[in-house]
Length: 190
Image (tube, rainbow, N blue to C red; front, side):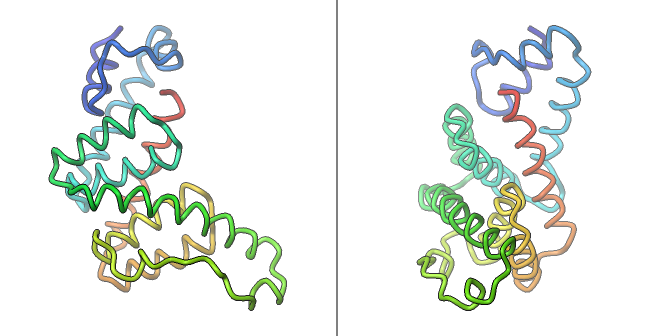
């Protein structure tokens, strides 16, 4: 086991004794990617347009989306350490679940693009979007990140516009989506 691998797991709040077969395989064969991944994760958690709590909450949303129990647990603890409340953490779980429904539904509407589907009432309750604990801007930013992760063009466009209308810069949006991409790549090998 390399020091880089151990430091990567430590940054995520994971016990370095836990074995992840793909990570172990890459670490044993060639440290270049593990080093890159460690640097990418470390940098993502310190992007200038996100505070640490926001970065860990976004990372948590990726773990929830990917149903990765170990990192859900460790990143929840990291979120708490960075000042997230139980209500904010619960909202990340709810937001990720809701966006999964919306992403499937709106991808279908986009792919098929028929008048009936485009004008029929959605019929999916979304009350958590009205007055989010996380605040409207960050809620929309996290919604954008999950939508990008799930590949829903309509949702990505809608949430990107909404988050900008709530005052976020394009640089902040870029950092959030980049963090999401990096954590998705991490979970592929954990």
